[in-house]
Structure formats: C-alpha cells, structure tokens
Amino acid sequence: MTTLVSQTLVAHGHELETDEHSFGWLEDSAAIRNNPEALRNSMEENGYLYIRDFFPRDIILEARMALLKTLEQGAIFEPGEPLVDGILKKGIHPKFNDTAWKNQPTVNRVVFGPEVKEFYTHFLGGAIRHFDYIWLRTMGCGPGTPPHCDIVYMGRGTRRLFTAWIPYGEVPLEVGGLMILEKSHLHADRIKNYLESDVDTSCTNLPGHDGWKHGGQLSNNPRSLRQKLGGRWLTSEFSPGDLLTFGMDTIHGSIDNTTPRIRLSTDTRYQRSDEPVDERWVGENPIAHGPAGKRGLIC
Ligand SMILES: O=C(O)CCC(=O)C(=O)O
Ligand SMILES: [Fe+2]
Image 1 (cartoon, protein in one colour):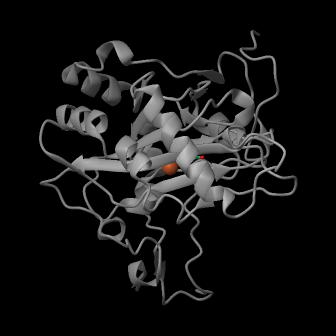
Image 2: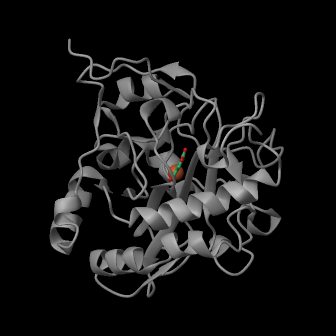
Image 3: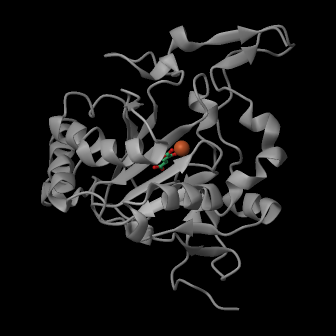
C-alpha cells in the first residue's frame, strides 16, 4: 500500500494510518473562489472549502506578529530566539487563549475584513454577520484538538453557519494543522444524538448529574473514529494566506504539534444576518461557555 507521507502522524495521541485509503490532502478550491454556485456545490459535496492564498500574505504575517507580541507578555517564548519564529520555552504547552485576540486591529482586519465579508456574502447569497468571539489557538507541542463538530458549541441559532480556520504562519505536518474527515457531513444520521447535543446543557434531574461535563468531542481517538465512519483524514501543509471553511456537521480535529514552534490559528464564524444567531458569541464581551450560557434540562 502506498504511504502518502514519510513521517509518523499522531492526532490526539493516536498514530494515524497514512495509506491512501485512510489519509489524503485537502482539495484546493482557489480556482472557483469567485463562483458562488460552484463553491456551494463543492461545500455540499465535500463539507469544506480550502482556498490557498485567499488573503494577502502580508496581513496574515502582520497579525501573527501582533499576536506573538501580546502572547510574549506571558514570557512563554524562548528568549534567545527571534519572536517571529514563535519558539516556546521548554515545558510550556499552551493550546488556547481567551484574551490575546481582543483589541487586535490586525487580527480583526483578517477575520472581519473585506475578503471574508465578500466571500461569505456571495457564498450565502445575502448580507452576512459574524460571531464577535474569536477562537485563538496557540497550540504548543502536544495533543491536537480531538474530533468534533462545531454545532455542539454554537447550535442555538441557525445551522447554516460556517467556520473559517485561518493559520498565521507556516503549518507543516509536524506543526499540526486542521484535518477533516472526508464526507463526514454526509453521515449526520449516524451521529444524530451527538449533533443534537449542546455542551452548555445538562440533565439536572438524572442521578450522577454533577455539572457540565460534555467537552464536545465526538471521540478521543481519531484513528478508531475513522475506521468506524470511513473516509480519509484530509489535511494540508498550510501557509499564511490560506482559508479553510466548513459547515457545522463536518467532523474535524487537528494533528499533534511535535515541534517547539507555536501553531497560531483562529477560527471564526459567519452566517446570514437575517437568520437567528447563537447569543453566546455576540456582543462586546460574549458570554461564551460561561455560567450565563448554561441551560439545565429535565430529561
Ligand atoms: O485549530 C484547532 O486545533 C481546532 C480548530 C477547530 O476546531 C475549528 O476551527 O472549528
Ligand atoms: Fe471546531
């Protein structure tokens, strides 16, 4: 069997199979970028759109530097190394940052700027809005994000909602970019209970109920999940300027970072402005998964 990559790939601590039936590359849709109908067809068929060189590279690199400078206030980078390289100190393994994205004009320029606005307006066929919250990933060496669908975190508004995953720097395989389970959006019936769940809801009447435990992942094992559902794990060696966008039912996760280099990316969300919005993610200080967003149910 042909192996597509020479290195070992690990995702959430599990070695991925890299034969051609289990692993592959995201298809680049740059050629149809300005053709909304073709984009919609491709999203329907594949559950994602990957557009290389979507953004001017310089605005991404500017946002990278701004984020690195803010993150360095926590003294997390190796002092002898250029900040631009984002080399983390030994023993520092960040994953997510809840605040460093705030008041960052260069990041806002990317995620809420004209390229994205024009793209989703054409893709969705009408005026759009975005969530105000920005998910900032600051992945250090260690396990990537376990497989999940985004709907369980943001399903209180329209389901016609799209995630934009944007890398701020080179993300070769060993730095661990996003991966998508091929055609997984077409298996919604097989994971129906999962897709109907909400991480901020729990059954207050059930025995053993002791809080809000649903972490949102569909599985902690990307390898066995793929064996069960079929399809290949698809990824890329991402570059600054790339955009990867996908819908709420598409199963995705990320490859583990095995280097000391930080993997900086954001994920942000877009929808039609005339459709209902999940209130947890809008406003100047979104309540996010905080106490105000919790809902107890009698099940
Ligand atoms: O960047 C990651 O590791 C996870 C990103 C993600 O889950 C998303 O973009 O929805
Ligand atoms: Fe996600």
